[in-house]
Amino acid sequence: LLNAQIAADGDDGVRAKEIMNYIHTVKEKSMANENDLISVARAYNLLGNKNFYNDVMEEITEKFPNGETVIYDKIRAFRKLSSVDEKESEFKSLKSQFKGHEKEKEFINSLARVLAVDYGKIGDEANFNKYVSMISSGNVIGSLCNELAWEMSGESLKGKGHHLEFAEKISKLSLEKTIEEKQTAKSKPSYFTTARWHQNMDNSYAMYSDTYALIAHKLGDKKNALHYQTIAVENNEYGDGDMNKRYAIFKENVDGGLSVIPFLEKSITEGTAGIAM
Image (cartoon, rainbow, N blue to C red):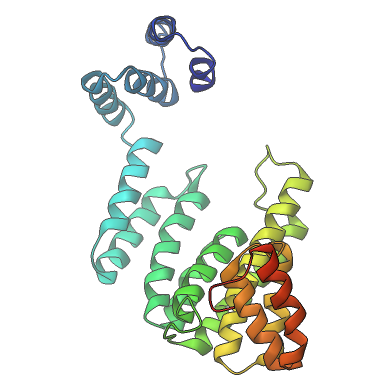
């Protein structure tokens, strides 16, 4: 709300005055909570006063040692740990600290995602599945599975893939979770309309289909490569040159070279063809 009010006011002098009035109003509250002080810190930051900003953030840490500011600092520090062993140890400690917090699931999702990605990158399916099972959000699972699967795919037709069988499994999981989230709206933010949520899920499904198609192609599954690439290019309205190139190749593999000529001609004419096309 503060940011919206300030953004609507184009006069720097008036803007600074409004921010200071806001700061004084909050500071006069006898029982300012953590969110109140965070708003004050942000206000000082908008004024460019880094010293006051740092002072307020330090005050928040001292007054609310179990508050969200401290928790998010711990999560950021957790992400920066260099080894999986360190993260494993810290995960157990933080999981215990977060127990009973109203945002416990959100915090655990963040931590478990990091370890799932770390184990996924080295193809450790058992530990990957262990930490994925701790994530309550299908949206988070879908996103991390696609991120990993895309990296494993080699990220292009020429890129060298690795752990492709594992990549196929988790890419398929990303698709399944997206369908589930669209149907249940379990992770839908309250400010999203149902129509907007469905559109977001359709876009995610198409992006994840692009990943699955590339993996299927590298595993020799020509029909599924074409099927899922078709979903990707149709959702993108044939506007991405790299996607279109893969679609043309996958279609030629299934239906023959002649079947692709009309698509190639149309793409070149409309300027949506990849360089190789």
